[in-house]
Amino acid sequence: MSTASGAAEAPVTGAAYASFLAQLPFFVGVSPEDLQAFAGFILVRQLKANTDVVVQRQYGHALFVLMQGSVVVHAIGPDDNPVTLGRLGNSGDFFGEAALLGRGERTATVTTETDCVILEIEKHRFDLLTRRYKSVREHLEATHHQRAISTYLRTHRYLSQLDDQ
Image: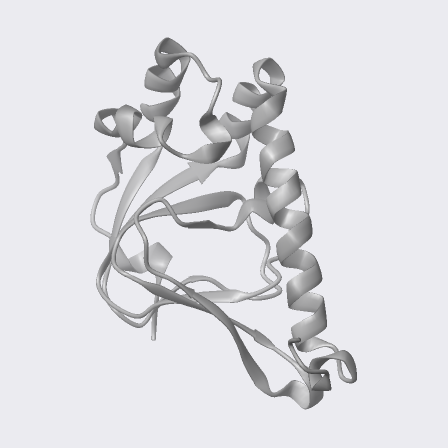
């Protein structure tokens, strides 16, 4: 498998994607002018299938938004067995929010299933935006809490044996 750091050609900024970003639920309430300025700092990544975008237990500094393609989310579960946590394949699906919220270490590995176009939002720029728009951080916090609980239940030695019902 290749990794995201070496898979993309020269990064292209996401300035042309401000209208796409405005449709993401966590950017609701951000002014069009601020979103346009923010979009100029977002990187666009074109990744081949079977590329690890993020790797569990490695330090993270960015959130990723899927524009095209699909990814699989997996983690090391009980007894060091891999557990598939889910698949993302819709334009606007995102992952890696824990890194933007200061959690640092990745809680899962995300691997491209198909060739993908992904927007990369770096923590530093995100922090500057959330100083002005607290709702952006609050939305990602809620998403992170839901996902963290789900991941814990699926990867815990005993809890993972319970029925999903």
